[in-house]
Image: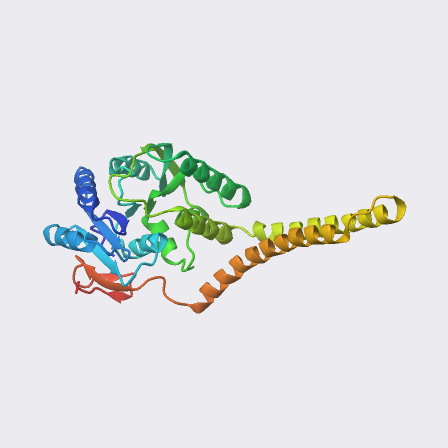
Length: 327
């Protein structure tokens, strides 16, 4: 580890050509003010636009900037993990490239870190430029996740946070494939605190987390940190089996002891549709867990690096991979 680097800023990027140059300038302005050695570590998660070209040019003119290129798109959470694996600072800050999380909050995080906190996460007071649906689903997700897990995952916080070197070293040992970084950081423990900020509108470009990816991230979070969905499947099975039994008794009673006659095909069809739907939901829950077990059993690496730029001679990723020049 290069002890001369005090701060590592990890920035996962995917198709951010419209904003990446501004992101670099704002990060550099903020970090220059700390008057301490730092590195800006950009992780390119398979961009198909000019993001790589722009970052490569920046690397050539600024020795504090490093670039890791994935062989393809592995996902936002994996890109963060790669940044942590390669970061050499005593404090590591994770921030997205879209400038919704202002770099100007980083000095507040550093101040808390110097007070002795190992994790400093940014908690949103307000979210500008987001729809009511986005805000409502985000609030629902965080509160639902907190209610079904035993991990104290802070509300209204994302991946924008500072972690101490020893926390980063712990994170490097966690190799699960379906990752939820903010949950893993909470699971690791250590002394944690928050700084509050106002989340800004996206500076340019489009969100890289549409509804589909948000749902996928939610499933990763829930299946990684809770078995309660499986227990819920058991409870649903008991509940609806009991309901079906009592409905059968009711139908027999109506048939034998009253003049009313319930059409058999109507009740059977309705009951079948209802209970088959419940069974499919339960199978889906079990399938989510089984699929994640299958992914873990493959033993494949989290990511593949095609090239690295800005790393000095002898610098190695995670103590294993030799540095390589950009092709």
